[in-house]
Length: 169
Image (cartoon, rainbow, N blue to C red; front, side, top):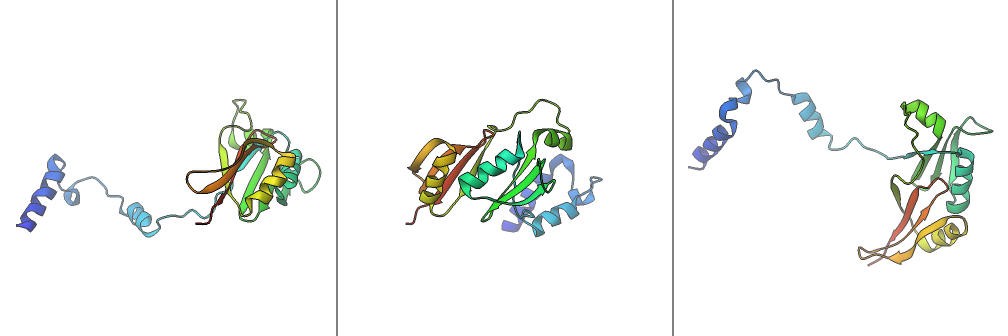
């Protein structure tokens, strides 16, 4: 009886379309198989933030959050691009003109304020104490209902950064 119900359900689902196996519609098996084999190909997210002055932004992140420079273009002088890192957090900064050229943007896009970055940290009190000396704190250190301590700042380009530490249970 169960088998018969299964067959009836399958036939009703196929309906007027006919059987997929015998239809003229190609099945994208290769794509489906790749998706099933590799649930995720994502390894890392590194935001590339459009900024007005890369050198100034790098100095801000070094001073306020102890980020280190790992790459710049050019190597010295006035940068068009830079990568900074602190722990497992990596950010890229690209000069507005260079960003617009690389991505074909010609709409007078403005840096900052279009999204926020959520950065998990350890020892949030140390991060907070250093950040308040150099950054514009827009949300003071507080405890959330979902078990973190957090605070938010606006960087020198208007991007919002929220720093969070999970509380121990």
